Amino acid sequence: MSIKLTQLSHGGGCGCKIAPAVLAEMLAKLPATQAFPQLLVGTETADDAAVYQINDQQAVIATTDFFMPIVDDPYDFGRIAATNAVSDIYAMGGTPIMALAIVGMPVNKLPVEAIQQILAGGAEVARQAGFPIAGGHSIDAPEPIYGLAVIGLVDPKRVKRNSAAQAGDRLILGKPLGIGILGSAMKKGLLDEPGYAALIATTTQLNQVGSTLAGLPGVHAMTDVTGFGLLGHLLEVCRGSKLTATLSSLSLPLLEAAIRFAQQGIGPGAIERNLASFGDAVTFAPTVADWQRRILADAQTSGGLLVSCAESEVEKVLQTFHQAGFHQAAEIGHLATGVAGIVVA
Image 1 (cartoon, helix red, strand yellow):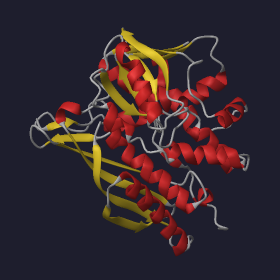
Image 2: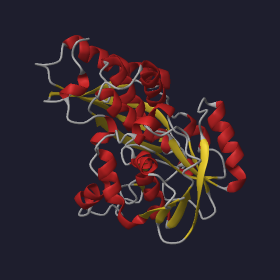
Image 3: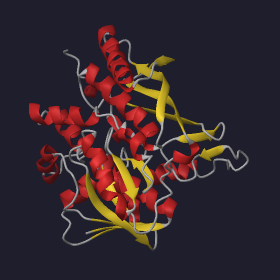
Image 4: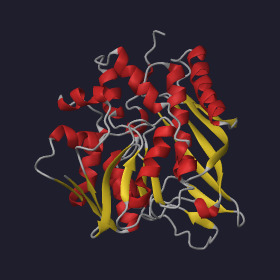
């Protein structure tokens, strides 16, 4: 197709997200939700989705996610956006049951066939995950936007908050980092076919394993890594759980093609926005190279699950990831008592 989707938008994927510090300021004056005791998870700890308890066995999970294209192929864009949107359900330990499509398209610039392919990509992911896209809403927009509002179910006892991590927990990351960097390289015409294939394979891999991980007794907290980068989402875990994290820069799973581009300074503008938002909460050892810092703050689109679990559960968590096809899942650090923040060694 001659039209390049990424040329129609000013940003792409989860790199479009508003910087963490700015978002926190925007949400600061929202009314408190304590008057709704059945709301198990709201906005208090910047968790992945809202959770509302229906009865002793069932709670509803609600989330929405949408963005502008990270790739040029319409079908791939639809698949990535849908995979990313449903990931929040899995990150809470739930199972998706239904979704609504969120569609904004520049109808005077984009052929109907391209829009059909975007929707078809999203529908294929929903089919794979076992839930229907039962409706939605569309508008004529200046830039292409696609995503889903997803509803899921979970046993209230299996909800995995990002604020329930415990001192002594080990941190395990399910997918490799570097997605935003590869997207930027593609936009510059620098990404080869193997690199593009790695980008698509990673961003369209459903985090369904989260529903299984939620059933392991030693798994205390989960979140998925998206637009704020690994550091941003781990910092939410640290602040919510009132713990400090230590990461090993040498243990991080990375997309091999992203390393070279990171070393060349290629990446989305969200990297700088994210780094600026962390302030004094993140400390880097002198041995951590600038390109490693950038990968740690790289905006991930449809990134991996970040699991906080007891040391005794590490092998079981890794085995569960690997058996589900997340072959690069790895232990990357640990949590301890202390001031909420992150040390990268």
